[in-house]
Length: 94
Image 1 (cartoon, rainbow, N blue to C red):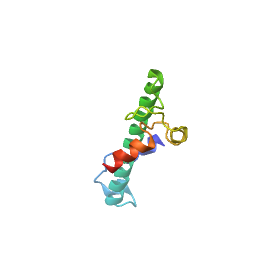
Image 2: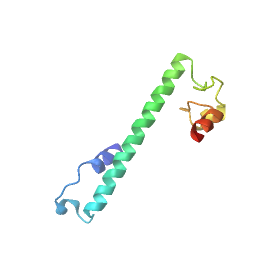
Image 3: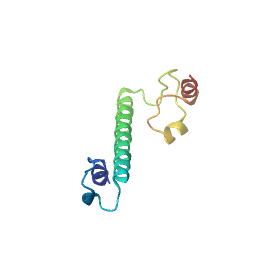
Image 4: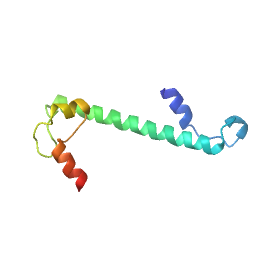
């Protein structure tokens, strides 16, 4: 999957014979989607690494803003969560 994403993210060739049936616009759209997907994967890996660091430091499961425990169901849904629901809601409303 990563290999096909890397191929999709490659620079779009101007030579239409290399593109085949896809138009240049379709190739550019595929490239943009592959790049966005790669960026999301990289962000997810950074978040996972940060969560593992919090586990090592003994801070995992504590809200970054209020220091209260994050509900286990929230961590089950998103193990990389930094804030409890209340603090995250306040942050989004701001």
